[in-house]
Length: 290
Length: 288
Image: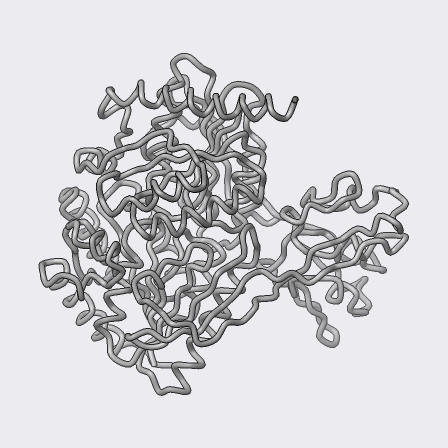
């Protein structure tokens, strides 16, 4: 079983559209949406929910006003400035519990925090593990780890060949959590200076965690000079360029219809994504196995 | 006045709006742009600022003096993040899991734990013409963006207009960046992805009790459900930017919209006027 994670650094380069299409092209796969705080993959795969689980994570401090003698020690020690006027701001609280440990009147308790949901759903392409982090919640990295763990369990139990994960933008905690230990990363970029700058940083994260990376240039014809520059950089760094997808409004049209673009159109976008999947499956077959 | 520019979904045009709004105002107002998208900061690509100073962003992580340690295990017991463990006669620290709360060193009965700083990023400041500029950069391989964002915001001016470019998503880095704004502009696109993530972003700013308004980018693609949603939710659309490959090409070359197409400048000034109306209205209703 091989795990492919799709990342980009910069948001909005087309990760989810590509993953939706790979879902339609790959055989025997489990799908995972690791973009837990702005998940969109379900909008292409029309899942029917099979299981829903609560995600309990971390704690939030609570001050019992009846016990509090307003000594102010908690406010002085809290590094997150989460206690003001002897009340906790749950959004700023990072759940470290330092305040409750030091409170001389034992007025502060730590309460469990329901931070979202995760789901196992059926789609016509195979099982999908996805999640919804609660509004303004922390621990997205932990929820991503949980989504991947469940996807692996399903893949192992059901003898699946692939896990294909839609990753979050950026390079921080949820990206690291999506990436570590995967077999291959597909980095979807676009030929804009900001896309190129962000690609560089996410390539750095792949190197840091020892995950082989491949690159796909989306909307390549928006700036062919930048596209050539990305291609030569990939070449000089020994990173496999698996394809370039032209800009075409059929991608947006397919999103509006709620289907992967490879099932909506048989034009050049679809042919290119098919070629990308052929190259990725060869890379996955040649790489290390679980 | 602090205006944050957020979106939920990535790639909808936050950076385009933040840089063009900041540049449009910078002739007549005192303006500062804070790039709080510290995982992937891009404003500098468009503004090419002169950087005049920088400061490392560090977190305090524990350092155990084993000569003093009695391996009582108190530190591991109080750590909510499993960042310190006592195994027999060894203490292990995992600094990448540490949130720097300071509980272990404060509560160690032997005073065997001191805190040392570990660099996780950098803050840089300077200017682009008359526009003040600050950006944060999370170091590659580091997980925790919020401390870098806090540091960037610490350099925000107390007067004038401060514009904050917010990272995508709705979780802790977004909350950290948006907190304290007088208004949050949500940049979206008229597609099901744009709408889904916009609704999440609206819930987030409402949770923080911050008024919001919409910039609709790439208008003309997709469908009309975003406009419908904004009408139902009574959220004003203050600026509409059409789908235009010329705008996309300018963006790809790192040229801001108001520099590449100066006819946009008055529209961004109008956007500011719309923002100020909402902020003033809010101030009046609070005072009433």
